[in-house]
Image (cartoon, protein in one colour):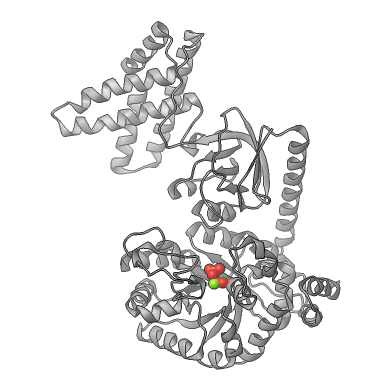
Amino acid sequence: MRTLQGTPGSPGVAVAPAWIFSRAALDLPEEPVEDPDAEVERLRDSAEQVAADLDARAAKAEGELAEVLEAQAMMARDPEMIDVAAEAVRKERTPAARAVVDAGETYAEALQSSESEYMAARASDVRDVCARIARRLVGADDTFSQMSQRSVVVADELPPADVGELNRDLVAGIATAQGSRTSHTAIVARALGIPAVVGLGEVEVDPTDEIAVDGDSGQIFVQPDEKTRSEIEGRAARAEDRRRHLIERAASLEGDTRTRDGHRIEVAVNVATEVELKAGLEAGAEGVGLFRTELLYLDRTNAPSRAEQSEAVRSLLGLLDGKRLVIRTFDFGADKPVPFLNLPSEENPAMGVRGVRLARDQPELLDDQLAAIADAASSGDRIAIMAPMVATAEEARWFVERVERAEMEAEVGVMLEVPAAIFMAEEIAEVCDFLSIGTNDLTQYLFAADRQNGRLGSFQDHFAPALLRAVKTVCDAADGRAWVGVCGEAAADPLWAMVAAGLGVEELSMGPEAVLEMRVSLSESTMHGCRAAADAALQASDAGGARRAAEDALG
Ligand code: PEP
Ligand code: MG
């Protein structure tokens, strides 16, 4: 057994054979084969399977793409080309994967030298077909559609388009060399409930290896020993039982989430992508409480066009079908850098020109984003817009006025994540429709403890009485003026959510994976119990005490 340590990307555990996803250059075998007849049979089987897969894709595609796929299926069945490869296997004992790539290359070169542009363009199709056959032969397949048994996908990194194709019934787990908790792979894996470990640095495994993934600890085990395997299988079975149990309990839930004594608490979902929204809605989310818009801008050397931004908003509105979409305007800077802005480097970026401060510095950027949102909106949509990193009532007023200038039907709010804003919550609430508490940054600034610094992780405990008292201050100040939501990680913890509801929070927004359990937990609680838990937790002098006090109060 080999143990590799990476970063937890998506919680949960799984054990299954490896499925190596590789778009990189193929590592073709060199060793002469021992049984050429068997190798030729493998070659013909693989070619036929690739052809059948291409046929199936062609049937689902339309127009030119369908034609290309059909032509590729014919190439995979081309008897002449397969015979050339088979001959190399028989005569020179060349491994089939190498033989088919060589045969394809000879064809491709002939096509490439053709006078006809059309024929020359077919060269890359031939290469692609042969590479597919070769990948199949060496077990390094690059298309999930050919996955036929439950597997752990092992990859350097999964391109966004491929991640979108993941089938949660077949993909038991994911292990990638690159990536971080906020990379696309991790976001989508969490949304789909697939355990994932990312940022492993290097993952050298054979197609025949079995892999155990522990998405909670960030470890993978290659060829796990019996003890590890049965521990992982046990945890996976318990998690599955729990999921089924939750689904049963949720079956009786309909419409809005309400406590047993009838108080409505809106359970919303945090999203950066459509996949997350789909997963959240499936779990019963009543809207989006935080649309992190930065994803569209990250890793870009040019700003996305207004049309592109608008399309991203429109696609979410389409899925929401009248449910509220809370859009956070860009929060660039610190942990969310954007290359195209060429922002000057700062000593303390977390406390630098970020969020609404950057919007004030470069108002045209904000106006462009607001115009794109206005373009996307049509009647029947419920849009809310909020600014990140607001510290003063004056900033809140500036932002509200900016949104008003964009002339659209929208609620306007701000995120409360800077301590100064907590003390000014009343004045801020006077000018806003809502306040959304960002507990991730608020905790970081309350404790002056960098949220990215693992050594200071203990400060990020959302039961810290200082944070609970800040939430109470906001709820009291906003009462009757603006509604209060929470969109930081704290909102995903059912016990904390009950305390927050007891303090007066009306909306809780969380990752899609937390939505179902939250709806069930809140529906089984009472507002009376939530208030008792809040009162008890507020009295505690430390986080552990606050947690225990809340648990005791709720029985
Ligand atoms: C927060 O700070 O709590 C928050 C929700 O925003 P982000 O994590 O994107 O900074
Ligand atoms: Mg924040």
